[in-house]
Length: 249
Ligand code: SAH
Image (cartoon, rainbow, N blue to C red; front, side):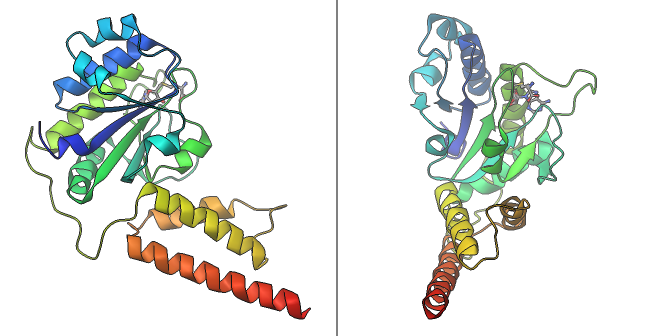
């Protein structure tokens, strides 16, 4: 197994049809991908999934079942969400080719995740907020929604193509320190939100999408572990000053 392809995690969120889980496993295996994470699947393991996997049952057997998306993303430093529709939010968007290339460039520094939504409703805004990029497979504007396993196939193909079918990652991206993981970035946003409330910059009664805007800003750069520490240190210092000022009042 290619060591680098094994750092690519396919995450399926709350899949309703076990056949789609099997179909996704098969799609992955044809492209050399093996790491499947299932967030709260309606039914798994299941004979229908195994039947649809048709020979990719090793991918199913090794699948990790998680309770939440955050748990499925643990340890990943790049998270890409998928969407059948273009969202109104101006999320950094990749086309399938750019998605494959971004993944091939990122695996040198650690694990990456590609997240797929529910058959009926896709991913929620909260789930999309945990993704740094969004990828949309261009399709018929009058009928844009691919079957879940078909979407996994298209994007797995692009990943395999970007790797040159079993090749090496594009570049080892660790100059300047280790990239921040998804948990570190989520921890930073929670901390920042709390600190902004305490210094009375963010009014929880009228947040005006501030956190969403800040996420968009920070998602444009690839935060490093050390940079997250600096930003959290700044939040702690601001919180200390706000507490001192409150005592003096
Ligand atoms: N009605 C839902 C459709 C979900 S389709 C919606 O509008 O979001 C189920 C999943 O398949 C999606 O969450 C996404 O992960 C994937 N998918 C389907 N079509 C896609 C497309 N054109 N581009 C990217 N992902 C797609």
